[in-house]
Length: 180
Image (tube, rainbow, N blue to C red; front, side, top):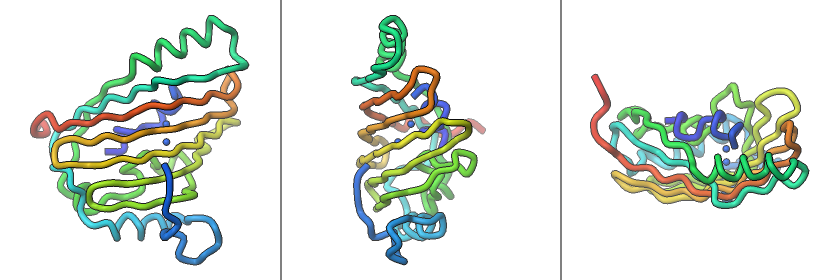
């Protein structure tokens, strides 16, 4: 499922708002252990296992230090969005982990906020996938058995184009069973 929010999309462009309940030790940071506990507390996801198609698109892209022609190319590419398919297993539905929402270990993400229930989530995270790149993302959304929608705000620093800020949406729909 983490493929739905792959950092590759973040590098093209990745991702909420708010509940500090996951910060159980009160240090102002959500550790990996605290994030794992919060993900488990939400119970099973409302989503059905199967093959899911996800479209990630950005309706607002700002890259103020990039040349005008580069800005236009970025806006055109991000505006078209990216569509991909991925299988969601029964195990992922029943026990989602932090990589469920785009924070695989190789992304080197930390959570500032994290709240998840069976039918929704809010998260704010900072990822440092390597080099000078820093991606700050916020997502919030609602899940149903066969569809979901998430809003996303993201700012990325350390790119060859300078700072890039994007706002968009992630729409997912179940399109059938996973291939055998």
